[in-house]
Length: 265
Image (cartoon, rainbow, N blue to C red; front, top):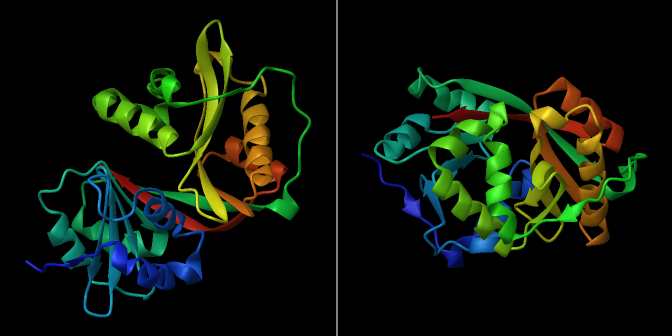
Protein backbone atom coordinates (compact mmCIF):
# COMPACT_ATOMS: atom_id res chain seq x y z
CA UNK A 1 0.00 0.00 0.00
CA UNK A 2 1.23 3.49 -0.86
CA UNK A 3 2.66 5.31 2.16
CA UNK A 4 2.28 9.10 2.20
CA UNK A 5 4.66 11.44 3.97
CA UNK A 6 3.53 12.67 7.39
CA UNK A 7 4.30 16.36 7.59
CA UNK A 8 5.60 18.17 10.67
CA UNK A 9 5.83 21.74 11.89
CA UNK A 10 8.89 22.39 9.75
CA UNK A 11 6.71 21.82 6.67
CA UNK A 12 4.17 24.51 7.60
CA UNK A 13 5.62 27.25 5.32
CA UNK A 14 5.39 24.89 2.33
CA UNK A 15 1.84 23.89 3.31
CA UNK A 16 0.79 27.54 3.46
CA UNK A 17 2.14 28.05 -0.05
CA UNK A 18 0.32 24.94 -1.31
CA UNK A 19 -3.09 26.04 -0.01
CA UNK A 20 -2.72 29.79 -0.59
CA UNK A 21 -4.66 30.04 -3.87
CA UNK A 22 -7.91 28.84 -2.28
CA UNK A 23 -7.73 30.39 1.16
CA UNK A 24 -11.43 29.97 1.99
CA UNK A 25 -11.60 26.36 0.78
CA UNK A 26 -8.55 25.53 2.90
CA UNK A 27 -9.58 27.48 5.99
CA UNK A 28 -9.96 24.34 8.13
CA UNK A 29 -6.44 23.20 7.26
CA UNK A 30 -4.86 26.59 7.91
CA UNK A 31 -6.85 27.09 11.11
CA UNK A 32 -6.01 23.66 12.53
CA UNK A 33 -2.33 24.20 11.80
CA UNK A 34 -2.38 27.57 13.58
CA UNK A 35 -4.29 26.26 16.60
CA UNK A 36 -2.70 22.84 17.05
CA UNK A 37 0.43 22.55 14.92
CA UNK A 38 1.28 19.20 13.33
CA UNK A 39 2.88 17.37 16.22
CA UNK A 40 -0.09 16.65 18.49
CA UNK A 41 -2.52 13.74 18.82
CA UNK A 42 -5.38 15.97 17.66
CA UNK A 43 -4.17 16.93 14.18
CA UNK A 44 -2.11 15.08 11.56
CA UNK A 45 -1.35 15.98 7.96
CA UNK A 46 -0.03 13.77 5.15
CA UNK A 47 1.24 14.61 1.66
CA UNK A 48 0.67 12.13 -1.18
CA UNK A 49 3.23 12.00 -3.99
CA UNK A 50 6.64 13.58 -4.33
CA UNK A 51 5.18 16.83 -5.68
CA UNK A 52 2.25 16.72 -3.22
CA UNK A 53 -0.50 15.28 -5.37
CA UNK A 54 -2.84 16.09 -2.46
CA UNK A 55 -2.89 16.76 1.28
CA UNK A 56 -4.94 14.79 3.81
CA UNK A 57 -5.63 16.37 7.19
CA UNK A 58 -6.98 14.49 10.21
CA UNK A 59 -8.72 16.30 13.04
CA UNK A 60 -9.73 13.62 15.57
CA UNK A 61 -11.73 11.25 13.30
CA UNK A 62 -12.57 13.83 10.65
CA UNK A 63 -10.56 14.06 7.43
CA UNK A 64 -10.17 16.86 4.87
CA UNK A 65 -8.58 16.52 1.43
CA UNK A 66 -6.94 19.40 -0.42
CA UNK A 67 -5.34 19.37 -3.84
CA UNK A 68 -4.10 22.14 -6.10
CA UNK A 69 -4.33 19.80 -9.10
CA UNK A 70 -7.38 18.96 -11.22
CA UNK A 71 -6.87 15.23 -10.60
CA UNK A 72 -5.31 13.39 -7.67
CA UNK A 73 -4.73 9.74 -6.80
CA UNK A 74 -8.02 9.06 -5.03
CA UNK A 75 -7.31 5.33 -4.78
CA UNK A 76 -4.10 6.01 -2.84
CA UNK A 77 -6.08 8.10 -0.34
CA UNK A 78 -8.83 5.47 -0.04
CA UNK A 79 -6.26 2.71 0.48
CA UNK A 80 -4.49 4.76 3.16
CA UNK A 81 -7.76 5.40 4.98
CA UNK A 82 -8.57 1.69 5.26
CA UNK A 83 -8.69 0.75 8.93
CA UNK A 84 -8.86 4.37 10.10
CA UNK A 85 -11.70 5.43 12.36
CA UNK A 86 -13.65 7.89 10.21
CA UNK A 87 -16.62 10.04 11.14
CA UNK A 88 -16.49 12.35 8.13
CA UNK A 89 -14.45 13.04 4.99
CA UNK A 90 -14.89 16.45 3.40
CA UNK A 91 -13.35 18.51 0.61
CA UNK A 92 -14.08 20.86 -2.22
CA UNK A 93 -16.89 19.18 -4.16
CA UNK A 94 -14.83 18.48 -7.29
CA UNK A 95 -12.18 16.79 -5.13
CA UNK A 96 -14.54 14.63 -3.08
CA UNK A 97 -16.35 13.50 -6.23
CA UNK A 98 -13.12 11.72 -7.22
CA UNK A 99 -12.97 9.85 -3.89
CA UNK A 100 -16.69 9.01 -3.64
CA UNK A 101 -16.61 5.96 -6.00
CA UNK A 102 -14.36 4.21 -3.48
CA UNK A 103 -17.17 4.51 -0.88
CA UNK A 104 -20.31 3.54 -2.84
CA UNK A 105 -22.44 2.96 0.28
CA UNK A 106 -21.62 6.28 1.99
CA UNK A 107 -24.04 9.18 1.30
CA UNK A 108 -22.53 12.14 -0.55
CA UNK A 109 -23.76 15.55 0.64
CA UNK A 110 -23.01 18.75 -1.24
CA UNK A 111 -23.20 22.17 0.39
CA UNK A 112 -22.56 25.80 -0.54
CA UNK A 113 -19.51 27.67 0.74
CA UNK A 114 -20.21 31.33 1.52
CA UNK A 115 -17.96 34.22 2.50
CA UNK A 116 -18.68 37.47 4.33
CA UNK A 117 -16.21 40.33 4.13
CA UNK A 118 -15.90 43.08 6.69
CA UNK A 119 -17.00 45.72 4.16
CA UNK A 120 -20.01 43.71 2.93
CA UNK A 121 -21.40 42.87 6.40
CA UNK A 122 -24.98 44.10 6.70
CA UNK A 123 -26.08 44.35 10.30
CA UNK A 124 -29.70 43.34 10.65
CA UNK A 125 -32.22 44.57 13.17
CA UNK A 126 -32.72 41.88 15.77
CA UNK A 127 -34.60 41.36 19.01
CA UNK A 128 -33.48 42.13 22.52
CA UNK A 129 -32.80 38.63 23.85
CA UNK A 130 -29.68 38.33 25.99
CA UNK A 131 -26.84 36.74 24.01
CA UNK A 132 -24.28 35.00 26.19
CA UNK A 133 -20.66 34.37 25.26
CA UNK A 134 -20.01 30.63 25.68
CA UNK A 135 -16.91 28.91 27.02
CA UNK A 136 -15.66 25.39 27.73
CA UNK A 137 -17.94 25.19 30.76
CA UNK A 138 -20.94 25.18 28.41
CA UNK A 139 -19.79 22.05 26.55
CA UNK A 140 -22.58 19.85 27.90
CA UNK A 141 -25.23 22.48 27.04
CA UNK A 142 -23.89 22.65 23.47
CA UNK A 143 -23.76 18.88 23.03
CA UNK A 144 -27.27 18.48 24.46
CA UNK A 145 -28.61 20.97 21.91
CA UNK A 146 -26.82 19.36 18.95
CA UNK A 147 -28.25 15.97 19.91
CA UNK A 148 -31.68 17.43 19.07
CA UNK A 149 -30.72 18.80 15.63
CA UNK A 150 -31.25 16.36 12.76
CA UNK A 151 -28.20 17.36 10.72
CA UNK A 152 -25.88 17.22 13.77
CA UNK A 153 -27.42 14.60 16.06
CA UNK A 154 -25.83 11.29 15.00
CA UNK A 155 -22.18 11.87 16.02
CA UNK A 156 -23.26 13.74 19.15
CA UNK A 157 -25.45 10.83 20.22
CA UNK A 158 -23.07 8.03 19.17
CA UNK A 159 -19.83 9.72 20.32
CA UNK A 160 -21.02 12.01 23.10
CA UNK A 161 -17.87 11.82 25.24
CA UNK A 162 -15.59 12.51 22.28
CA UNK A 163 -17.77 15.44 21.21
CA UNK A 164 -17.71 16.83 24.75
CA UNK A 165 -13.92 16.68 24.74
CA UNK A 166 -13.70 18.29 21.30
CA UNK A 167 -16.12 21.06 22.30
CA UNK A 168 -14.20 21.87 25.47
CA UNK A 169 -10.91 21.86 23.55
CA UNK A 170 -12.32 24.13 20.82
CA UNK A 171 -13.25 26.76 23.38
CA UNK A 172 -10.00 26.39 25.29
CA UNK A 173 -8.16 26.94 21.98
CA UNK A 174 -9.96 30.23 21.45
CA UNK A 175 -13.04 29.57 19.36
CA UNK A 176 -15.76 32.21 19.78
CA UNK A 177 -19.29 31.03 20.46
CA UNK A 178 -22.51 32.70 21.53
CA UNK A 179 -25.91 31.46 22.57
CA UNK A 180 -29.36 32.21 23.91
CA UNK A 181 -30.65 30.42 27.00
CA UNK A 182 -34.31 29.93 27.86
CA UNK A 183 -35.58 28.25 31.04
CA UNK A 184 -32.02 27.24 31.93
CA UNK A 185 -31.14 25.51 28.67
CA UNK A 186 -29.28 26.53 25.54
CA UNK A 187 -31.78 26.99 22.71
CA UNK A 188 -29.69 28.66 19.99
CA UNK A 189 -25.98 28.84 19.26
CA UNK A 190 -23.26 29.34 16.65
CA UNK A 191 -19.49 29.55 16.88
CA UNK A 192 -16.31 30.16 14.92
CA UNK A 193 -13.54 27.64 14.46
CA UNK A 194 -10.45 27.27 12.25
CA UNK A 195 -9.55 30.85 13.13
CA UNK A 196 -6.54 32.24 11.27
CA UNK A 197 -4.89 35.64 11.20
CA UNK A 198 -7.45 36.86 8.67
CA UNK A 199 -10.56 34.67 8.81
CA UNK A 200 -12.63 32.05 10.58
CA UNK A 201 -15.27 29.43 9.81
CA UNK A 202 -18.73 29.69 11.35
CA UNK A 203 -20.20 26.29 12.17
CA UNK A 204 -22.77 24.70 14.43
CA UNK A 205 -25.59 27.17 13.79
CA UNK A 206 -28.52 25.55 15.56
CA UNK A 207 -31.86 26.37 17.18
CA UNK A 208 -33.81 24.05 19.47
CA UNK A 209 -36.83 22.68 17.52
CA UNK A 210 -39.26 24.10 20.11
CA UNK A 211 -37.80 27.62 19.84
CA UNK A 212 -37.68 28.20 16.09
CA UNK A 213 -39.35 31.02 14.15
CA UNK A 214 -38.45 33.52 16.87
CA UNK A 215 -35.46 35.14 15.15
CA UNK A 216 -32.94 33.65 17.58
CA UNK A 217 -30.55 32.45 14.86
CA UNK A 218 -30.57 35.94 13.30
CA UNK A 219 -29.67 37.48 16.65
CA UNK A 220 -26.82 35.05 17.36
CA UNK A 221 -25.39 35.20 13.83
CA UNK A 222 -25.55 39.00 13.71
CA UNK A 223 -23.71 39.19 17.04
CA UNK A 224 -21.14 36.54 16.11
CA UNK A 225 -20.24 38.29 12.85
CA UNK A 226 -20.08 41.68 14.53
CA UNK A 227 -17.73 40.39 17.22
CA UNK A 228 -15.51 38.64 14.68
CA UNK A 229 -14.94 41.80 12.69
CA UNK A 230 -14.38 43.81 15.85
CA UNK A 231 -11.60 41.35 16.74
CA UNK A 232 -9.87 42.22 13.47
CA UNK A 233 -10.92 39.41 11.12
CA UNK A 234 -11.29 40.40 7.48
CA UNK A 235 -13.62 37.58 6.41
CA UNK A 236 -15.89 34.83 7.75
CA UNK A 237 -16.99 31.66 5.96
CA UNK A 238 -19.73 29.09 6.45
CA UNK A 239 -21.42 26.16 4.74
CA UNK A 240 -25.14 25.71 4.19
CA UNK A 241 -27.57 23.53 2.28
CA UNK A 242 -30.80 24.69 3.93
CA UNK A 243 -32.58 27.39 1.84
CA UNK A 244 -34.06 29.02 4.96
CA UNK A 245 -30.63 29.31 6.55
CA UNK A 246 -29.20 30.49 3.24
CA UNK A 247 -31.69 33.38 3.12
CA UNK A 248 -30.52 34.54 6.57
CA UNK A 249 -26.85 34.36 5.61
CA UNK A 250 -27.38 36.32 2.41
CA UNK A 251 -29.28 38.99 4.37
CA UNK A 252 -26.12 39.43 6.44
CA UNK A 253 -24.07 39.91 3.29
CA UNK A 254 -22.62 36.44 2.71
CA UNK A 255 -21.93 35.55 -0.92
CA UNK A 256 -21.68 32.05 -2.37
CA UNK A 257 -18.15 31.37 -3.61
CA UNK A 258 -18.06 27.61 -4.21
CA UNK A 259 -19.26 24.11 -3.45
CA UNK A 260 -18.11 21.85 -0.61
CA UNK A 261 -19.03 18.22 0.05
CA UNK A 262 -19.03 15.69 2.87
CA UNK A 263 -19.34 11.96 3.35
CA UNK A 264 -20.52 11.04 6.83
CA UNK A 265 -19.74 7.52 8.02
